Image (cartoon, rainbow, N blue to C red; front, side, top):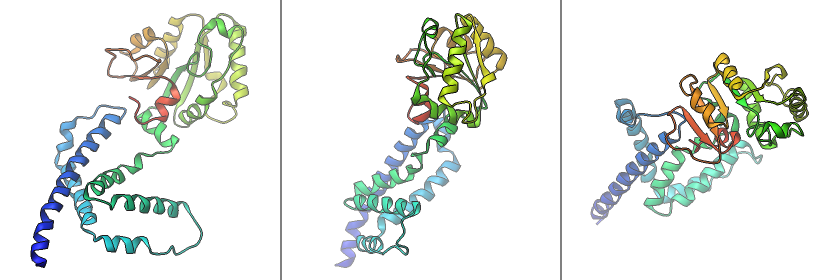
Length: 283
């Protein structure tokens, strides 16, 4: 009788394993598309990848074979310390996730995949560093990216730093040499921009340097600045400037609410600087 029960459960576990493999490969493909650089999917089938996949499946299969009673006993073990720490909170979160996954084989397979990719919930500093892709110098225009204003004419009246961009900008400055630049119509506009940046605290917080805020009188002047500085990244809102720099700059971020068609492979699109560097899903 027991032997018959064991034989009938083997096909069910086989189905769970096949389902887990399919979900894992789908998640792996999705993860590769989220990276800020192209990945050859054929290379994912290399011997190294297959070995890693085999190890992962072995652990997942062991997890699936754990009797529900044993899993419940493990969850009921009291904590050795009454004080809550970051590790304890992470453990509690994992246990709650395991409870949800124990309802069926399908949900356990999905949960195993989700837990495998749990480290993707990264802090902002880690997200920025990953998106920079080892870049060490960044040039960035001010209008429409760091400032609320979008035209040089507006800078003749006021300059307002966007509060939402400050944290990301300072994180970028931790890893990169950052140059800010803009076209202005008069010297007073430049002083107004510097004053707004100073009031926002970006110079005193570390990373950004006042002397690396550059001003020019034409759009071609900004192109000249970027060509001379030879950054790894340039951020701009002008589609024509992005197009002209495509051949010379490794990575370009076009900040625009639209989705331009037929962009070069080294050009990324985002609605804002903070959205691109703060969101792993942005491409």
